[in-house]
Image (cartoon, rainbow, N blue to C red; front, side, top):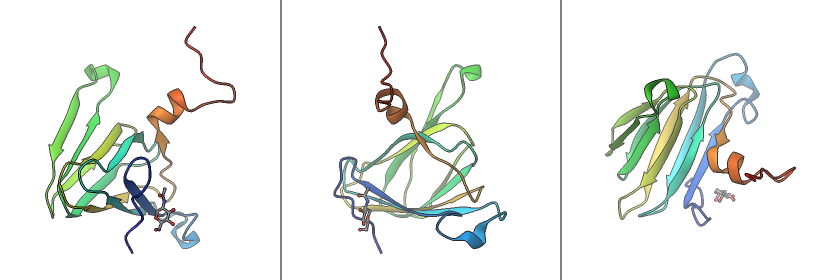
Length: 136
Ligand SMILES: *[C@@H]1O[C@H](CO)[C@@H](O)[C@H](O)[C@H]1NC(C)=O
């Protein structure tokens, strides 16, 4: 079933990790189904601290990318994917997916941990309110 993308970012992730399916414990894999609203549906920059992700596009044309580490001067790697294309996001790298097509986009992804974890970058920098992060 498609997830409802009528939210602030225009995307919806359905996750099958060890919390959803305890039988995955120790198997080293999780699966997500991602729905993107037409033009602008976004999975905002985030990282999975415990897993590399391979994403396969089922429908639509998302722009995807990741930023590599400080050691490499943080280069940005991007690609517009089409139906049937796959892209690998290395473990720990901040990455995103943005639907630039005018139809909904759908992707499946496999992650190399039953508990990949997710940290949304903006939420950590701007969303912490206990206590808030103050720059001055
Ligand atoms: C994702 O879609 C499901 C199913 O329609 C819905 O219950 C859920 O609230 C949606 N999540 C977000 C963050 O919009």
